[in-house]
Image (cartoon, rainbow, N blue to C red; front, side, top):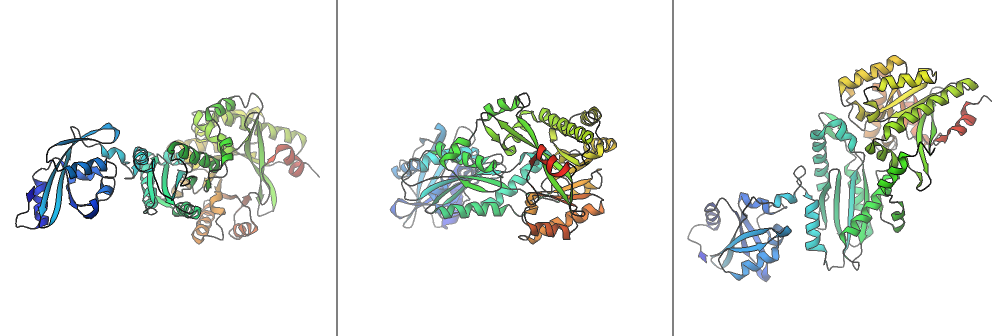
Length: 546
């Protein structure tokens, strides 16, 4: 044991650490009842902990991701020789403990090293600084597998909605910046009973100890609230939403992490297929809706061949004339095994598998065939908007493909509208060239879900765009959020100055319609007027001459 010389405690501890600058050194102070506090650490010791070091913090908290019980055992044995202890993942660590006495207080200089660089950093996500998936698995095994407490445990699995489009449009570097900004907001919600992990690329996970369900609901609502303020990347505003799946273990239930996580994933899946941007607790019947994606993809590949796809049309009301002179074509899938599969489920699957090109071509052919048929039958002419995926839009021959279909069905181009997403326009020169070719054909071009993606306002004046569609997330907050209303007004005003029409999506209430009309929005679309309808119903209700 070392006794302090006459100089101060702080000076001497710093002197001890300077004697060995290459290893991690942690100075512990022994407290009552077998407790230890961390009084000082050197720069190498920062890698030992996922937590922010504070003088006097609890040693068990500091060594949270290490085997604290084994470390404590070595300290109390006071053998003053190099010990080898086994850490997580079977890693072996050299450890030497030197007791230091100052007056009546006992300190320990804990010196640690490995044969290789410390690997505890692997528990930390490099971009966000949060604990990662590996840390979660380790902590569960160490802390919660045999957790004996009357509090319940809940997992809140937070998935950023359609974040793939931000990766595509912003690029990886800026998308990482956005993830970092999101994580900073989520960190605000951490607490004594709330842990936060960066679980995956666009997924975060809260692990919460609680007594009441209402505590979990409060946290879920706080997560959604944190995302309502836009994120600024390169001077541009971007809005992000999230879906949350929640699973809970009651105090008397077995602590099976994988089962709990699977339930949270099923709840998340339910949210994703029922509109996104909200939360749901796991219920047993959700298991029946958790489809096998591989099997579903196999069925989707044969959907056209087996005549399982159909098109519904949703009317758009012209606020100037109160007439319906345009529709949006929306895809539907009725499969013998899965039943009616929502677009929010099968469209992402089609995009990830590449099937979206074949399916998109089929939709365009069907719409053009309707136009030819309706013209021959003498129905009044209407324009139909067709959604174009980024994968379709970026094909080298895309404008030629559009021209070919128009000629095949002898369709007047002015009755076809191509809806492109903002994520399709990441390459300015390429986008401008494609759009100019499309405009030369005479078709209308619209930007779908405006305000949720990449397109800079400055780019709009450069692109030959006819219509801007305001995303329904903005419309739903009319009369609820003044900033949101200001954004809608700005989009409409900008569109007028650029001689573009504006269509508002997701109009469901009369007061929303009134706001849009007062601010000179050209058209509205939503359940206030009609849901997407089968083509036969559209013909009877809107197209046949009375």
